[in-house]
Amino acid sequence: MNVDAAAPTPTDVPARRRRDPFVVLLVIAIGFATMAAGAWSFGAFAADDAPGLLVTRRDPLLPDLAMGPIEDIAVGTTENGDQRLRFSATIVNVGDGPLIVLARRAWLGNEDWSVDQWMQERTGGYSMTATGASLTYGGDGHGHWHVKQVEIHQLESMDGKVLGRLVKQGFCFFDTDVYRPGIAGAPEGAHWGSRGCASTLDTRVRMGLSVGWGDKYPWSLLDERIDVSGLPDGRFRIRQIADPNDEFEEADETNNEIWVDVALATLPDGLREVKVVEAGPAP
Image (cartoon, rainbow, N blue to C red; front, side):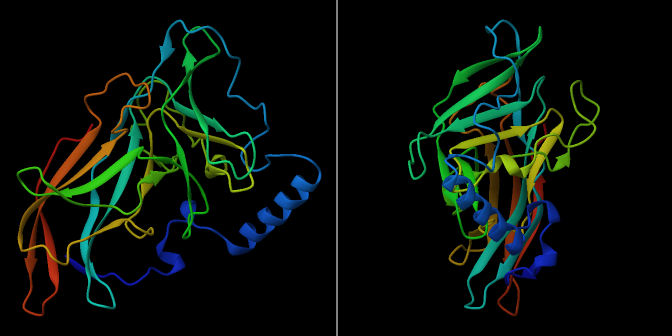
């Protein structure tokens, strides 16, 4: 399938990941007012707003991160003739407990974040462990904090050589789509939202992904594409990996990736089409 890769109109982007310019300006104005009053963080949550009582670790309900099926695969052509392979990606949690990440920094402008994982205990309360994860601020339409490399999306040759990756290598995750509503612990409605991704005016960030839910990045979002202009026709593999650096504790570390093989072909008019040849098993 070949499609036009021109920048999508606002109606092309799902409402759950759109940014209203008026709301952004209002949030910034409130942020400056809050700072003037002496507060350091306003957008994500109160400074001491943990998910629950902190207790000694005994038997935590661990999350299990994986990637859902790769969808909406297409090749688009930009105005200057460059060809982009684009697709949707969904990180999912199929574990026993939610993925909860709390991060904080000492002061505004400081890029040194401490990032902790909170785990729900079977007997009540939450235990906590420090992680090696770090944050990066996502501009260019995102306007919030991302966890670096909580996902990797890449294109490979059939012998495993990495040919390209998304420019965007950071993600803020929250509940956008039900993935496995029938598993134990899955809430009926979304519990974690985009507010926890915070802004430049925050010193606290809180992200979460509920059991049985996923966070879908649609193909139309900025940077959700890989340049294939110089690639010859042939078969290639798209691979998506959740938590590639094993920075978060999970129930299963063996099911973090998914792949799909595609065939690229040049049409008589010079445009490229892509067809799915084979798909790996979904978690």
